Amino acid sequence: MEVLMKKKMQMLMAAVAMVALAGTSVLAATGKCTVTEIKKNVVVLDCGKSAAKFKVNDKVKIKTIKKKAIEGC
Image (cartoon, rainbow, N blue to C red):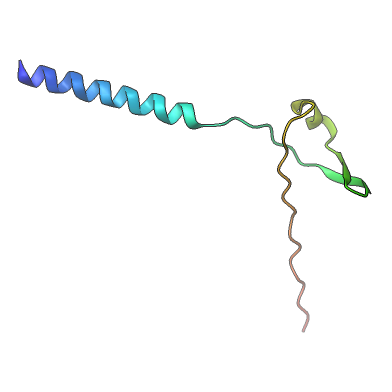
């Protein structure tokens, strides 16, 4: 009887952990865009076909691609 109760508690704890982990994940749209225009504090991006993934007033995080230095002889 005690073993059965321990198994039930373990299953309950595992279920709670799975719900907690799934609840904290955030789904975000991703896309590769090119800066086409800059006016004072406004940046215009061209995202091509992936633009449909974004909505008005979505917050966007921009990460630039760092260019590697080319070393000569």
